[in-house]
Figure 1 (cartoon, rainbow, N blue to C red):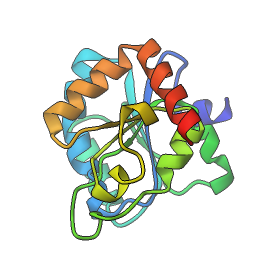
Figure 2: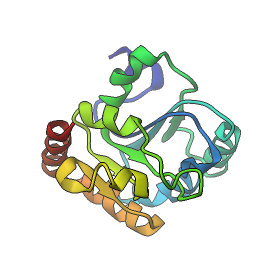
Figure 3: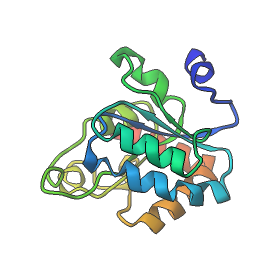
Length: 174
């Protein structure tokens, strides 16, 4: 697809997608710092961050500091109507938000977009989200520790069959 070519993503890449405004509570800074551990087990993994915002310079700095410019792609804002194209590149989608007063009771609508594309979601267990989507039977895997995130992502990237099962569960739920 054009999107793959535009961002240098091959058919063999295992793409992890985040879409949204890059606020400090995104949790992406910590996620990028843990990403080398994912790459140790799944060298073809790529992190595709579609969006922009106040946290963007920090994320770009961490990516450069860790030498991950070929594995972490930050696209900046993209047209809304292209979001399904980006989501459909994903082996899995993430919502690694930090639990704060601002995020505690939210339900990020992007989770519905991810699930509607049949994609499994790895997310922080925010109380507002858990109230609507309880867990794996609905296509969402929850984790709040950095080490657990890495372990679950590696496991999911290595099991296309399980990802497909959870993706169908999420699509059916939505």
